[in-house]
Length: 131
Picture 1: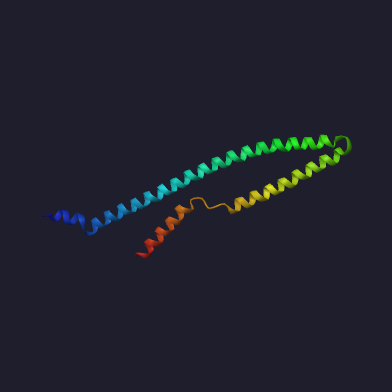
Picture 2: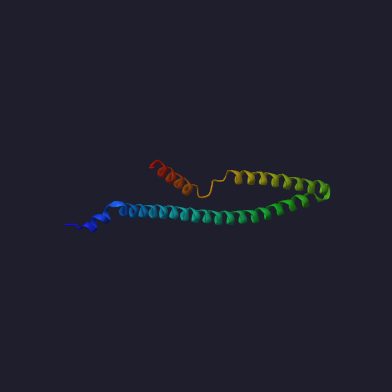
């Protein structure tokens, strides 16, 4: 037979408050785990992106250097100034396109921690509905 102390622990205000606190801690822990996971994903994505950007940039610069030298040497005897000007204009156009693309990517990138923020907003809405 349960005694009065056991009944008081299972019910009443103190039992409800302890269950509420446990639920809130579990909810907070879940949200923190989600935020941690998203942070790790963002960090790995940033590392990979940085490696790819540096590799592509180095290789593209070598390619552009040798193509530029080839064009200038090829036209050296006949139109050296025109060849240098053409190579310069091509670089200016490519740089403009790259900056435009960079601005577009920066503007269109997804919000960091979007899933965590969405879950927290749903939690707040759910708590407000229960009042």
